[in-house]
Image 1 (cartoon, rainbow, N blue to C red):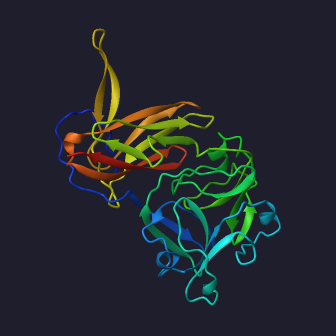
Image 2 (tube, one colour):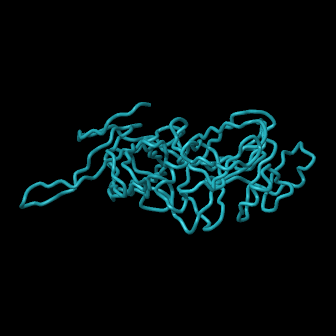
Image 3 (cartoon, helix red, strand yellow):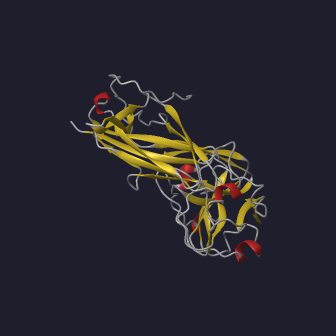
Length: 335
């Protein structure tokens, strides 16, 4: 659904009657024949590999569990999960090596190697979880990042704001072999793809735009209490973004308002003024912030426009560089 711009109209709106059980979205992953390095962005409804890959061409899935060194990619460029230590592997039940299966389930925000018998499209519906990349310092990390299907940033654009990752110690899987990204300014990240990326020291870098909600599980709103989302430009240049409420895949269309501080008069001073977002799905653009700049956006429920109960929603943040951040929302109105 296309965007509706931020409304400043105050009025009684329709009561919210839709309740969502989880913050869900559908991730679509394009698989090539052979090995694929995949970044799973959602927690599958049924995370058992046999269920997730049933009816697909995927016959092997592998997760890496040990710190990696560059020798793994330079000396052994071809994927081989059978002989290299550190891989937990699932084999399809019809394979002769199925009894060797050690991977019992898949998790969101995790990198996997998937082997496909033929090119296919894998569709995964699951819960969005607010998880941050945890970099292991001075090691290669098997990571991926949500980016737009079209217009994603180059590796240089994505990591330019982080000296820890501003290098070409990046490996991506190409035709079943690990290949170093020698020109980070010429190659782009792809949605749903995982990479080996070296962290030259400790890092908490999450991408060009840092998005932090008021809890580690996402944005939590309770009655009229405010919850904040903080946005910070981590690049070396101006960066703009949009905020979108995703009312699809069973997510509730929450009645939200931004809380602004308004100067009334010298005698009264400033007061909070809720500015209502539209009902349903909407997209709101924000102006570009300079390097290091940003804002804190206080949000509140319009409790008069919702029934008592607990709700789950989903917000999506998209930058003009083509990066994405998904923010789960939990909302409660008491009786």
